[in-house]
Length: 291
Image (cartoon, rainbow, N blue to C red; front, top):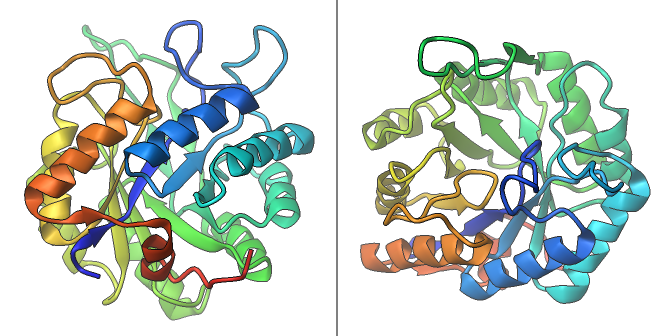
């Protein structure tokens, strides 16, 4: 299915304040945005989960009831959609995402494949936020992979830097997971890989043969050339309000649907087509009837 492209929509970010940017927080908002993304061409939704208490929607949560309500609402609104659950946490306590993996067994889940100093500087050099280590040592990665393997969840390796891309091959060699790797090239974070299309061929060369890969492009209008190059090279792509707020013309997107529409347009311009849910499951090796 080389002419088919799996489009993923990342519905909402980790800490974006809904009072500042109109990101979905409630189960109903998440479901509505998932429907908009699906109608525009996305067959996968990447889900973070937010605190539902009044005024606390800018904070993440692993509360079982909240996560369950979001997933149930999305599946009720868009039964065909593939759910890719976030698992990212800072620090050694991963009990929250592990409990959610075991309870809900999503078809896919993110597996952050290495550590990164998560940095950004403002004009003048001051830090935009206190320097943060997004820590993902091998022991933590293995615990996530063991849980995913035990529950039939396909890991999606999020790679913020070149060494992390290469580490996935070592995880495969070590027997930490089965099947072809699914790699997301996270490009555009200030302290990670830049959102530069010319990097893609070199990164692809470092992958295990048969790897499924996609670009997660973080930024403004520069992300769209990166998406186009990835589609040209045979990869999959992801957009959404977690990754960017801006359409190719520089205007601010009103929601996830317009972002996916713009990405699906690029896919067609390159001469490929957005995969259907059944085609996406076949491409991603998701076994029919597993869920």
